[in-house]
Image (cartoon, rainbow, N blue to C red; front, side):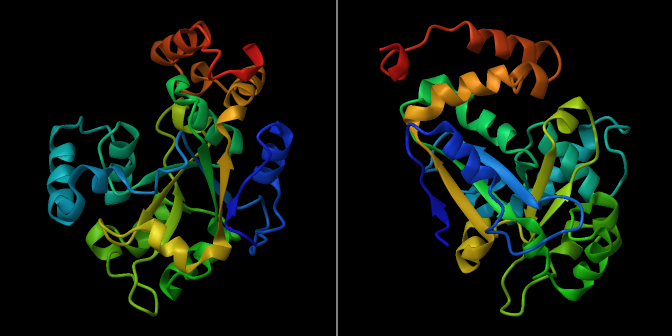
Amino acid sequence: MESVVEVDPDDLYGLIAALTHDQWLLARPRIRVAVAYRGHTSAKRDLSTGLVRLRGDSSAEVEPHLMRNFRKYAHRDTAPGDSDWNWLSVAQHYGLPTRLLDWSHSPYVALHFVTRDTSRYDEDGAVWCVDYAAAHELLPQELRNEIQPAGGGLFTTEMLSRSAYTLFEFDRFHDDDGHSIPLFFEPPSLDERIVNQAAIFSTMSGPMASLDDWLQRHPELYRKVIVPAQLKWRIRDHLDQANVTERVLFPGLDGLSRWLRRYYSPRDPVRNPRDA
């Protein structure tokens, strides 16, 4: 099956079907469909982490300094535990560039992030979909032993801490060909935002390792669904009707303000063919 999926630019429900169709999945976990979704406003954007976008080739050198100083200056009760995984989750959640990427259990949350910026409705977006249960079946045995009791689900920070308490220990894991490996985990429920977004984080065993490169070697484990620019306004209206908005996904006055600012902004008829 093709890893890049395109849909008719007039077919909203065809897009939703492409995102929720599960026959392409290799893994069949016991509890839920094991797909992680990530939405991009632009289909041209890759899966580079915030850390790599910040420092590129010097990411490995800078990462320990970023994390050390974050832990130093953050409130001592900020993280729910002292492992690197808990601190890394908190840092990512509050906007520090890290080796993590944000994903969601929900394709609707991913579509929100595709359509959150109305100034880019003239660009195709994309939703990345990864079969994380099948990806975890390719992990080294030590990590598979930790995740198998979860029935093909996600790691937790506690599970990761048992196998690798620090990032340095995690970076020793590689596949049989010596490549860095990815895994997906659920962050601690730090606040309502993480809960409401059905948040998932991904990471690679190496600060500069590329999830894009890994997926290219395993094209059967992902789909990149292109979101046509012509559909973005219809998707946005559909999400607003379904109550998938900034007010819900970012609880608090900041999310409320974001929602109201977008909802009451004038529509550009060039970007909204239905209003032309």
